[in-house]
Image (cartoon, rainbow, N blue to C red; front, side):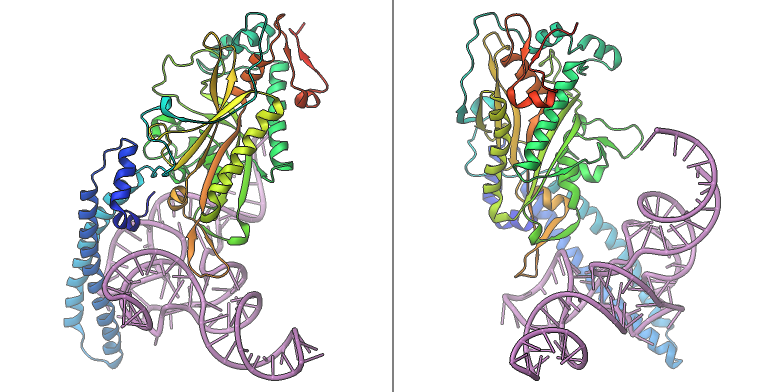
Length: 429
RNA sequence: GGAGAGGUGGCCGAGCGGCUGAAGGUGCACGCCUGGAAAGCGUGUGUAUCUUAACAGGUACCGAGGGUUCGAAUCCCUCCCUCUCCGCCA
């Protein structure tokens, strides 16, 4: 959520930010409503003040045994007026709030302007795609061939877009989760958390999933509960509506959780394999920082995520999302895209992590503040999040990059110990 | 799920429908005292919002939301959360 005062003082900058996102916003209406709000508020507070003063007098008169009937009559009328104006005020406040809560964040000046993912800016490339001297297969063929993935039976159990891992597949997925978590907590200084996989509406609103993107979520019927689409949601909200001490910043959390997404509107896209599932595993990184350090922290968060791919020896590149591809809450986002040789007949880079700085956008929604040692005023923290990494897609990338001619898959060195010393996945006998 | 108790400031803990933004304690900050420290003494110590150049002042907030009343932390209703006991359960 943007600060109303900031909008008013920087109207042109805010407008141009919204235009870059191709969002059409009627700011004139907002300003008009805000004026109305202020007028009402002043009137109400004046009346309340009067009521407070006179009520005091009434108390004194009663004590002195004087007759106060006429004042009571007067105040009865005043109270009714207040009640009426109060209703008007809360209506207009609700209107203003609904407006603000639906505004996306302003893209950072460094973000390229563009309409969609074709206009993202390439930042760097790491590693070289391996040359294969046989016809490479997509990961779903490899996985099903090895008997470690079974999409057919998963569909029987749940439906389309659900995974079923078996045997060494399940173990490899778990190995990846442990490897990623261990790396982030032991080498990158994150605190491991294990949050609820279901959260309420307030929590979803805090990070920006609600109110605009309810159709992307799974909601529990008849309850104020939603399945998390990413553990960014619970982790970022840990200190919601709190004022924390400056010494706690930067606050770095990581978690493994399953993630649940309805994938409404993506019919026909990525129908095969692990790329686009209703349920997938992810290790997430979240940071709460001071405003002046958030971009440095974004850079280190990105490198923390990259480290996983480097240790797995998977080729990738990094792009900066353009304004048209930028998420609702973010001011700037780097996507890490991993090389997937088995797809699109010749290979392509696929998003495997998304690292964002949200500035105080989420903090303002969720009420996450901190107090500096030397100043009294609470300030909003900056929030950052990034995948470290999407586990299912990492699994897929390993299958495709480490496949061999006979259909077996070599286990990356770093994972061997997590696989009980096993170095290759052959078809389970 | 059944029965009961409770949610007040950083923490503990008072609080009769008006004099309570809230006693008292504790913690914290600053000052005095001291060679230094402790003790002691003094002062200060929530958030939001509006008016104001500023000083300052107004308004709201005692789990949340409604209601009664001239006036609500205090009375009534609904909901949420915590604790204890019973039941059930991984």
